[in-house]
Image 1: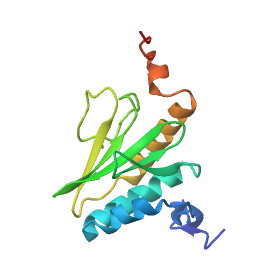
Image 2: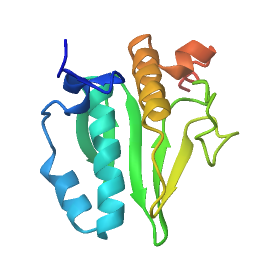
Image 3: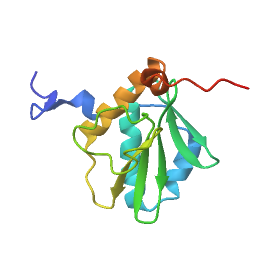
Image 4: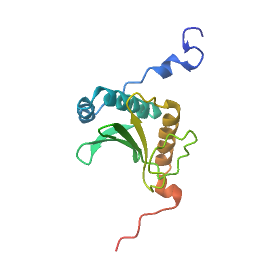
Length: 153
């Protein structure tokens, strides 16, 4: 159907973010950032919700934005010269495009860092979000890795 596709690449309905419930505390966090950081994290925020419309937003650790669905998906942290997106995947989600920038050996979360004017590999990040959500729905990365909680004394 002519007009519904953007140059044959993606349908237009996939290019327009679906509306989602925004946590006003995350809006406040983003509003306090420089324009370039706010733009990056707003784009990533839209991608998390594109991964699954049931994703919920919250604040943990007093001020840090988290995105959850049957477990943590990711969190944001802005620093002076870059922004971090922490992916809570237990280091089991494949990264075939090499977007992970830190935490390769971390057992809980890995990091994708973005600097000013750096393009976001939306396809790769969206795929990772979707896999993290699928893993969460399957019981979480600890269960999938065979790691249970230690017994209580």
